[in-house]
Length: 562
Image (cartoon, rainbow, N blue to C red):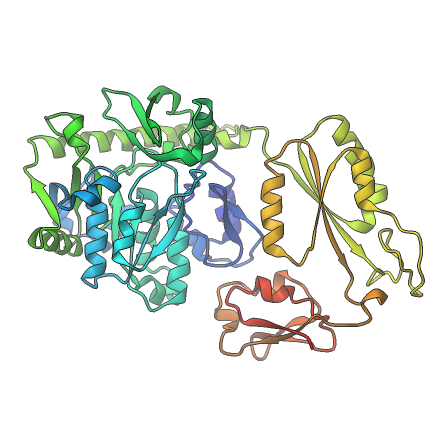
């Protein structure tokens, strides 16, 4: 299957900077340049690879759907409304305890548990529940633990990022529970557009898809929950009732709370969902959704409707019937037809929305609601030597105007490496004598800003602190305090000895696009063109150890210096 593959910059322009990003995580854990942060995929650094896996796997980059369907499914099973259909069933978990902790009939929990017990998969990737409603993909290696993750909160979990990380480690047969956009990303991986990644994709053995009309924005849902007097950590599950009810039902420790659906859709719906054409996860092996039964919702909510799409899905469902893992009941007449009509309606609505966006873009308008939003966090980063003459006056104005901004200042105490002069924050001059110094922290506090001090070598701590500060209102300053390693006050001591593992370092095959030397730019860590791997220049390396923290494979090793 031929396709045009572009690089990260094209992905950023076509998807990242628009309303199309689904948050599926397909571009995360392939390389160091993308990360998940609070329901958003963020680009940490630019990458100059011309044909990137991030672009190839994204469900929102151009895709030849017909070619993908022909590759993965039998032509005789195809329908234009819901994709491949080998069989359509109404099922539920036979184990009542599984149904009690799962969404609806517990079919997904039962199937994933069975697949693991039968050795079809070794590991299952599912969405984990967090107290703040923000889910994440996690790996389950023991069948009995799958049932603990069964409830839905209708917020996107970047589960494909977890698949990428697990596949990188290798040696596993992997199953995953996926939304439609995630299932499409995995299908694009299965087409193997990047040959070097093919062996990792082969570890994907089972995709169980979830029916999905839309997903909710974590930020907007959290605001809605709080406006109703609920606390996110008390939410135990959610459900969308059939259309005649027009309700989102939220289950808390104190009981169920009904929220009118017109307060949820479109107010809290993720922007990308308005452009999604797939309601039934058509690129899965088996797709599962809530049932619709003539007895009404009180009965239907305990059952699932299931579409079997592949031979593997067919075998798994047959095994579940044979072993009594699932209970089956007759499919009411017209159920599949009604599902097809609903699915076709979603396709048409998405097509109209995409056409409107394309028309706006062609006319020179934004065409992307996200780009018109205000109140997004603002962060500025400065070097300490520039603070007093460039930053401080603006900081005072920001406080006076009650701006919401996070300012990061690197307070590098000591002598300038290249300039051979004393920096304002330093108390030691080039001759090693004590001198008066400018106190950045005191200046910021005097201006009325809230100041936090952190070690710049503590990367995880900085990420956590920045995440917290950017949620707070007002002017915040994060001072990254660390003396230059070669400054006189350090007496030439190295904190760590640094080495590179020849077995762990994969050089140009790593997929990180030489992050260690192309982006990190440490003079003590250079690229060996002959070996096509990085090396440490011992005479230049100061032993700070930061390079070991950014290596994606753990190939750069630091040990405490004696």
